[in-house]
Amino acid sequence: MKRKVTKAIFPVAGLGTRFLPATKSIPKEIMTLVDRPLIQYAIDEARAAGIKEFIFVTSRGKGALEDYFDHAHELESTLRRAGKDHLLEALRDTNMESGAIAYIRQHKALGLGHAVWCARRLIGQEPFAVILPDDVIAAEKPCLQQMVEAHCETGGNIVAAMEVAADKTSAYGILDIREDMGALVSVKGMVEKPDVKEAPSNLAVIGRYILTPKVLQHLSRVKSGVGGEVQLTDAIAEEITRSNNVYGFRFRGQRFDCGSKAGFLQATVAFGLAREELHDEFIQFLISMTATRKAAE
Ligand code: UTP
Image 1 (cartoon, rainbow, N blue to C red):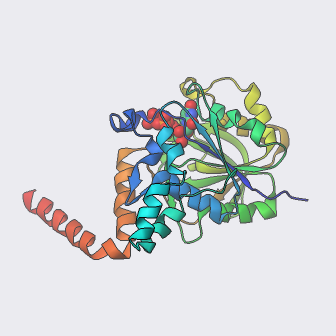
Image 2 (cartoon, protein in one colour):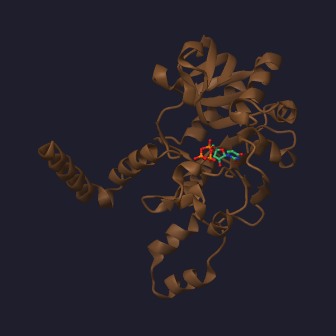
Image 3 (tube, rainbow, N blue to C red):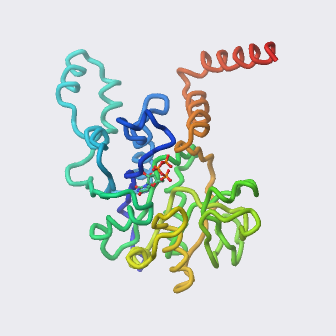
């Protein structure tokens, strides 16, 4: 019988150097898209997919992230007294059920693979999800939910994938496709950040995974790879060799790389425009900015 996916790992122990100096004191995952931190988008997506246990792999300086999920009793009672129910409602999504959330420390930023491995004792013998909160995905049906549904059919391991421009393959893990079945592809290999000439395809892996515990066993053995980091890609590639049980999944939606400045700005525009209460004022502003720029050129 296929096991349900009820646990998700959120690796949030990276240094976030691309956002220095902001990330000197603010965790990247607390940075705000419109009015919610990146981590809230990730949690909402996980909840929609049926996740019940949320495992954060954190590091030094991420205290703000832990505080974010605590009850803010004083703030809540002030809002209650003032009758600000809509604000109380907004806070409700930040509250986590007791015992639903766990924090594990990654003592040194040795790479994404190492961060996931740090959570191994909380996973046990069931499939689990991995969500990278700096990949924010706008989708009618949340991306992880789409993947959980696909997983009910396939079992095994599923990585979210999207086509990228050929000259961008060196920024991603890239899939070597065995069979293309449309939304799903079966995979015969996976390469981390290949040069354009060596890339087996232009189908890139982004920050959503459903993995089997076997991948955690491979992580115990893989040596550091590209960039001197322990790569999750290498452990998944090992699983492909051993079990032939890895699929790429072309999700429906638009992914924003909020780990980069350009991606974060694009997400701010897209999510700002998607908000009914902001749309008109914001679009007027964008139009006038574009016109001013054009006139100046
Ligand atoms: P990134 O490659 O974006 O690295 O990590 P980073 O440190 O967060 O940011 P930059 O590149 O220095 O700007 C992708 C994901 O993996 C996590 C990060 O927190 C992020 O969610 N990660 C990365 C870890 O948890 N531990 C690590 O050792 C490395």
